[in-house]
Length: 127
View 1: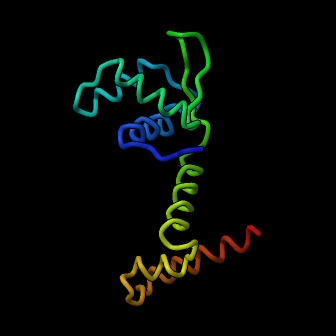
View 2: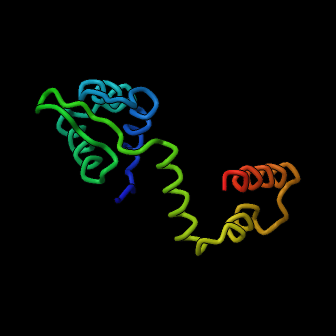
View 3: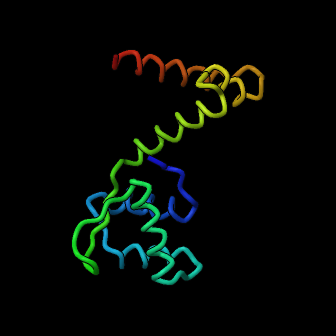
C-alpha cells in the first residue's frame, strides 16, 4: 500500500481517525476541510477522497451519495508504517544511527536516554 499522504489528505485522515473511526459521510469531510480556512469545492474534496481510497487507507461503503468512509488502518498503525519507512529509507533500518542523527551526533540527554530505556524494556516484555 502507498501511504504517502499529501498534507490535505493527512488532515482529512486525522479528522476521521479522531472523530469518526466508525465512518463519516462526505458532507462531514466537506465541512471539516472548509473549516480549516481555505474553501475547497466538493469536486476537489472528492479528489482527495478518491486518492485516499486508491491508496488503500480509506474504504467506502454504501451507494453514491450515501457513502460512508472508514479508515482501513488506525492512526497508530499509520504512524508505525511511516516511522519504519523513514527508518529504512534514511537510516538503513538502524535505530542507533537514527538516534545519533536525532541527537545531532552529541550524546542524548539523561531524560531522553531514560525514556528510550523504558520504551525498550516495555517492548522486550511484549515479546
